[in-house]
Length: 151
Image (cartoon, rainbow, N blue to C red; front, side):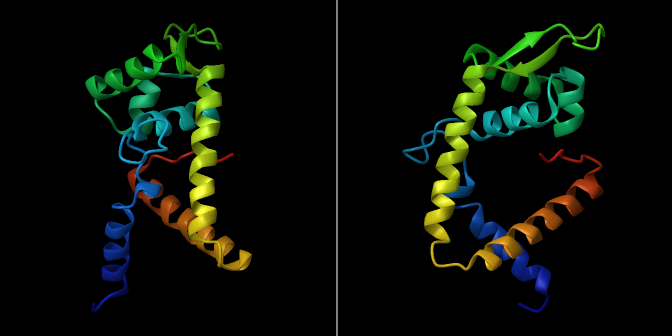
């Protein structure tokens, strides 16, 4: 490889093949929810209630894709539609207690997997890696103009 970004591309491609980085239900025997639900519920949890339009802008998804995802989490009881807490006309989606509980369980499963993968890494290396990932994600968010709120 001639450029460092080529190595990043290759390693990112390899990361995508691991079940640890892939939340699709069924691919990993311990997966509790699919990737889209994991990401959607994570956003609702950090940001609070969001309308269809806000979610569409946040994710860069068309209305039909977003409607399928919100319908799935709503049917499963993981999110619910509520009146806008700020008094606006649009109804908003909010994570339910069941959604919070399942999201917490899924996140714990992923953290447990990461603990196993990085069991022999010094804490300083893990912290540095997390810092680089945050910087990488933030750079993507700046380019796409879709910042992700962080807790």
